Length: 309
Ligand code: RIB
Image 1 (cartoon, rainbow, N blue to C red):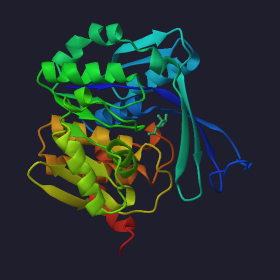
Image 2 (tube, helix red, strand yellow; image 1 turned 180 degrees about the horizontal axis):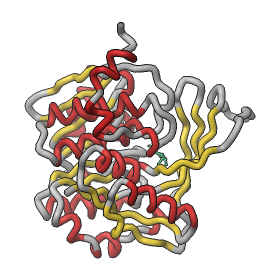
Image 3 (cartoon, helix red, strand yellow; image 1 turned 90 degrees about the vertical axis):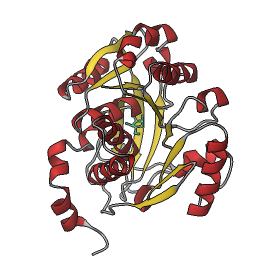
Image 4 (cartoon, helix red, strand yellow; image 1 turned 30 degrees about the vertical axis):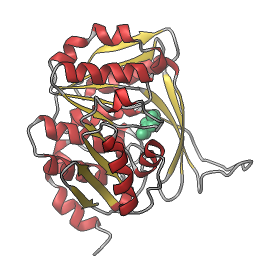
């Protein structure tokens, strides 16, 4: 089993020609409400791609909270660890431009009302899991406790450090696999990450402070795996992007789904790259995440869309 500790948000999504600059007004045709939140997106990806998943998180006692929970139930997620808070459900304001790039502002709401007591009440879920996955849209002490409980119960601990913030050493020491993108790696390490060589140096600095292994996602370029013995670059399955929202979440969820069924790390990374390639061709957060059936036809699907042919 996989336990995800993290956020649930209702995404308010607008499509514009470009992301507005400071002081600029841009026009969008409509507003869409889409189920999202990094924690919930990663949960859906792990479940839709074959994992048995429970989620620990919080939503408000509002209609959006109902909808966010119902969405997870459709993917057969165990939602008994999701608290109904007196705070409003988390929301995210998302602008997607004509190239599929986005800008996101998260309104934390109930996600910041998830307490250590709430987490500890569901320790049994972690005890019954082989992998625990978290992100940084919930309070940092809670994330640290989730990673601590993961290690206490012999699970693989995976942290997607998004949105990035400097992390204390006591948290870094608890992480088996850290999955930053290059911007997050730059914030975490304080070093530039514009080239592979720079990512390697920044990654080495993080590993010196306790991380056992690192997967740096590099968007359309691919990803970079590092541990104390080796570093491997995995080129991406490059396709035309419609919307990059939740591509990283899809990667993380797919990664833990593959690891939980016993795939090697290399196979799990390849599986996650394929899943996120599909997700960027579809709009929205949770609706963009592929199912196992989509993955079975991946080679043919990719052959028709690959950008390098
Ligand atoms: O990673 C994408 C997600 O970030 C969105 O679904 C939004 O809710 C924010 O959490």
